[in-house]
Length: 341
Image 1 (cartoon, rainbow, N blue to C red):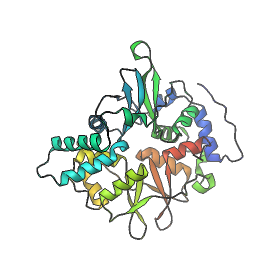
Image 2: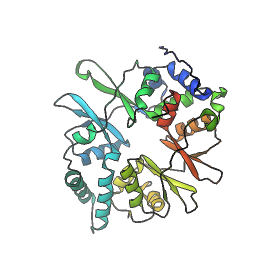
Image 3: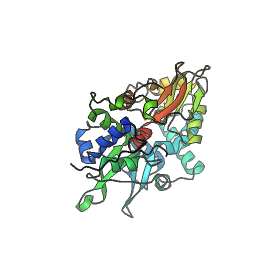
Image 4: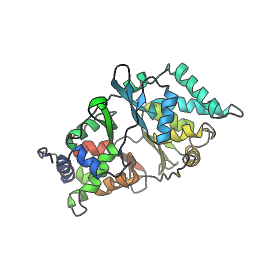
């Protein structure tokens, strides 16, 4: 087992120091050994750079994932990552167009989607989209502190393990997500360890930030347009009094696409989500509001993120109004003392 030295700083909280010391004891190989199959550290789905974005998106929907590495077979290297959020605007416009078409089917939906991507976004293959999402990688021997440094980079949600020999040399062997790191911390730090019993304020986790929200009477179209325009992975849904009543995230883009425009985006966002989240074949999605109080402990935060596999939780006050938000990326940056990004 490889150890990386951890030097406490005057700004380190007990919670951050404990998390950092835990991460320093392990490597990527240890994380994979501890992770249940399909728990944020799994096999690789690759996309070819010559694929049409609509075909690549269908691969992601089929495997219930939000992103995948894109391989350029001609140049024999990875271009970057294709992320579902890259085609959100096309999904929204396609759904609106389908509402105006009588007797539309999946073939019509695909045709409209292709038209939106190729004409509206000037895209005929994945290369341009993937190149916008930088391809970072690690090895099985990478220490988890170093892995966290990579995952803390803006826009980096998952890191491929690139190793192999012979024909597999330089190819992706596995992928580690931000959520996998948080789940590992939750499972590895004993419940008897009191370091994580600090409150969010005591630990100085920087959760007080602008919470982008939309009122629950707003249409699904407006909610997704807000996600797209601000390049966010999730927003809060609040009632007229500002109380948190729901949320929508990047995963809902997949459900909207699978729905194929059958459900009108003109209806309010919560009604729309209640339909499309249940329309995914073979799955019954449960998406309760994920929040913690401002006086919750770090342990409560980490365990909730690990259990729900959500990418963020909202921090609420005594009246259940969102006063902040903490993402899995925020937890990773906090753990390695890099909260300023």
